[in-house]
Length: 398
Length: 104
Image (tube, rainbow over all chains, first blue to last red; front, side):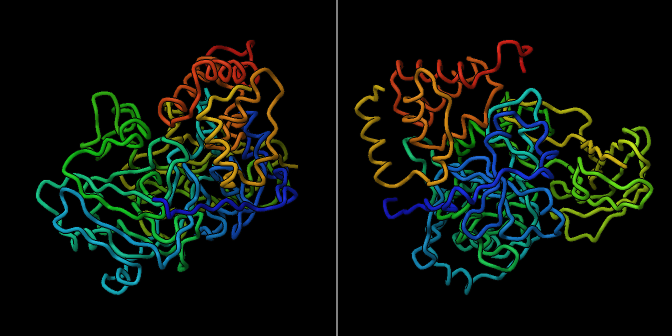
C-alpha cells in the first residue's frame, strides 16, 4: 500500500522522558540490567507517561499504579507494535472481506458497518503474549516486558461473525486471516494473523472501533481492531483492513514460526489447523493475578490496618477465588473478590492485613472457573510466553 | 563503515522519509569495533534500545541467531562480512559476561 502514512512523531523533547521513579523499582526487579538501564517514563501524544521499552516501533507498558482502575484508561493503555504505526484517516479506511472460502467479496466504509450491523460490546483483558517475558530466568530475547503489557477495557463495535456472514462463509472455511495497515520496513513478513472459524464466529469476537466508549487511540489500533477475548493480544490485529476467509491453514511467518509454544506444554491450543508435531500457536490467556496496591517493595506502617488490592484474570472461564499468603506460601486465606465485570474481564480483589515490624512477603494466587491455577515454578519456553508464576511481593514494615 | 550499495540506498531513503523518531537519538551504544555498522543497519527497522534492552544475557550464539533472523527473515541487507562484524560487536559489548553461569 503506497498510500500508507506512518506516525513518526513521538513525545518531542527528550526532557519529557523521565527516569523511572523509585516506586517503580520493585516492579523492574528481575528484568535484564540492560532493560532497566534503557527504560524511561515517556508520554506518547495522547498518552500518560508509560514505561518506554523501545522507541521504534513503540513498545510502552503501563506502570503498576495505573492498574488500580477497573477499566484501564485509554491514555494509560499499553502500546505494542511490530512495525511503524499506521496513520489512517477514517474517511479513507475500508474493510475488505474476501478469500477462497468467502462467498462474496465485500468492502465497507466505517459508516456502512455502523449503520448496517448491530452494535456489540465486550469487556476483556487485552494481554500481550509476552507480558512478563522480562522476568524469565534464564532470560529470553524479545521485548522485555515487566507486568504492564496488558489492560482491561470495554470494547465496542460489531460482531466479526455478522460481517463474515454478510460476505457468506463457504463450506470448507477453515481460518479467517486478519491484516492491518501496518507494514514491515524492509522485505520482512507483514504482521498477519489468523483465527480458527469457531473463534472468529464466537459472538464475543468483535471488530471494535471503540475502547471505553471512545474511538480507539491511534496507538491501540484506530480505526478498527480485532477483539478476540480470552486470547492473547497477538490476534487482536490493529488498524485492520483485510479479512480473508481461507480453506487452508495460513502459513505466514507470524503464525507458522512465531508466537509458538512447545506442543502440550500449556494444554490444547484449540487451534488444531495450526498445531504441528512440535508446537502449537499460543492462544488462551493463562490464569494470573497481580498485586497492585500498595506497590510491592514499598514501606508499610507497623500495626496498622492495610488493604492490599490486586487483580486476577484468565482466558474466559472467570475468576472463582483468589488466595493470599502472608507467610511465604504455608498458609493461604481467601481474598475478597470485587464485582464481576464479565468472564473476560479482570476481577479486582482485596485483602486486609495488620503487619508487624519486619519484612512481610505476600503471595497471591488466582483460581479460575476451569479449575486452573497459577504456576509455582516458571514453565520456561523459548519465546517467553505465559508467565503466570505466583507473585512474591515484599513490604518493609516499620 | 562499509555499507553495501543496497543498504546505503535504503538507509538514505529511510532517513529522508524521516523514519527516525526524535527521542531514539538518546540511545547511545558502547564504542567498539563495528559500532557504525550496527548503528546503520539495525536502525533501518528499529531503535537501538532493542539491543540494550536485550542485554547482557545473550551469548555469542544468541546474538548470532538474532542477527541471522534479521537478515534471513526480516530482510536486513547485511553481507556475510557485515553480519560477522555486527555479531562480534554485539557479543563483545552486549553479550553475556564470560563469568556468568552457563545458560544465564
